[in-house]
Amino acid sequence: MTEQSAAHAAAVTDRARLAGSAYRSDRDLAARQSLYHWQTPRHDLPGIVAGQLSGVRGRVVEVGCGNGTFIQRLRADRPDLALLGLDISAGILARVPGPVAVADAARLPLAPGSADAVLALHMLYHVPDIPRAVSELSRVATPDGLVIASTNSHRDKAELDDLWRRAAGDVLGTGQGPARISLSARFSLEDAPAFLGVEFSRVETIELPGTVTVHDPEPVIAHLASYRAWADQHEAPFDATIERARTIASDHIARHGTFTVTCLSGVLVCRR
Ligand SMILES: C[S@@+](CC[C@H](N)C(=O)[O-])C[C@H]1O[C@@H](n2cnc3c(N)ncnc32)[C@H](O)[C@@H]1O
Image 1 (cartoon, rainbow, N blue to C red):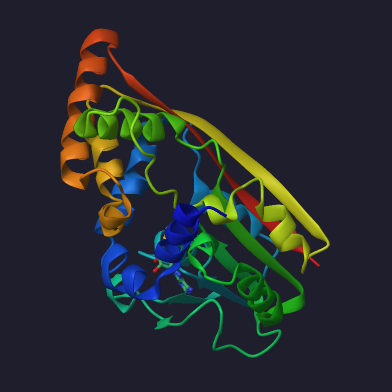
Image 2 (cartoon, rainbow, N blue to C red; image 1 turned 120 degrees about the vertical axis):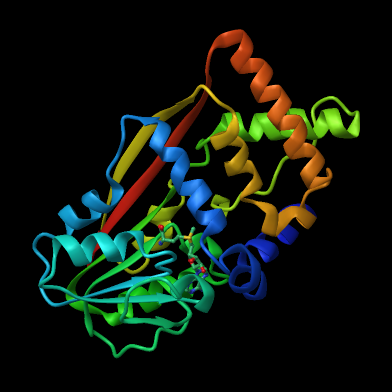
């Protein structure tokens, strides 16, 4: 690991930064989630997760539930389930209907075998010790319980990484500029089966490819700006890079009519 990627990994997993800034509210998470409104095909991720839970009865725990997108959908679709949302950020939980509790994926406040399904959606890359968190998910699931994780591919949204590097390079006057921080690289769709395979003998990956097409730069700029909690981790001035990215994306749209972003995320369904 390079010195820079070690520093990025520390910043991506820093609890004070996650709970106190990045996910203190759902402002930045919601900006990232809303980019998918412009994706084709539209994947109904909460619906996919609900579908995987069709054979599950009893208690379902979502670890790192954030602003409750999945919990709320499951409450509506599966009123028979006993749902519990956990997150390290009290702030983001404030508007999620209960029961919810502040808890760390590395030390779940649950008895062994007490959950019929455990969800860890787009969150394991934020945990300092991923194997320990996977072992916790396994510990609290019943022997025939289901664990569902999700994350992004290494290739996800490469055009946004390119846009950032161009904008940062223009701001610094260096041609191609330094890369932006990657949030999901520590637990990518490509690496996730190996992490999960330590605890689960069957790990099925459901890939969810798509293309975001926008006619206005703002959804793309809001996505870039949603990394503001990690502004200090970027070698180029954050706000100036965002402004330059807005100009580049606007010029691109003026010339080509649209700006497109290639997405690849996935759901991992794990059984013992
Ligand atoms: C990218 S958001 C995903 C939220 C939700 N699961 C979703 O997919 O919409 C990551 C969430 O994980 C939470 N989180 C980060 N590290 C955590 C940890 N060690 N234990 C529990 N939650 C954590 C964050 O506070 C944040 O709400």
